[in-house]
Length: 188
Ligand SMILES: C[S@@+](CC[C@H](N)C(=O)[O-])C[C@H]1O[C@@H](n2cnc3c(N)ncnc32)[C@H](O)[C@@H]1O
Image (cartoon, rainbow, N blue to C red; front, side, top):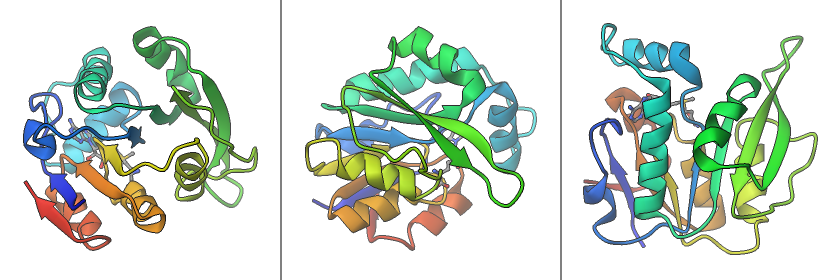
């Protein structure tokens, strides 16, 4: 299966062009964390005054997950946002505390999983390690891994290592272009 990418705002686009009726085997993403981070990514995308709504953003991830995925959901988030995600997706089946940052600025953050029980080391580090261990150990080989907010492409790197196709979306064209250097993507 080809790797696919779209450069769309998930608040207003259902990503039907990306999927064209195909379903992904899982959704793995590190989406924005809360209202401040949503504003930050809008500013990075030259949309400083764009309105943001954290609850609506989580609802959109749920909509895309239910529309395009047959399989588990993996979301990285900050400790403060767990309750917000669980209020929309229900209680996570698995909750992993992983390390975020480096040097003397290491903070805990979370990987929440619905619909699978992967094996992840307690020492896992946010970045490549965590999605690699989660996606390689959840019990099924994912043919298509979907990331609705792919950023600079960590999920694409993991898909490449696993021999899976990556279906990716990103708001910011500059970030999407960096992800496109990781894999051969067809742009939809
Ligand atoms: C924490 S970063 C993702 C990090 C990613 N795991 C990586 O490897 O770089 C969150 C991403 O969500 C994107 N994003 C924010 N709002 C979005 C929206 N409405 N639609 C699509 N992507 C969005 C941002 O541009 C940013 O690249």
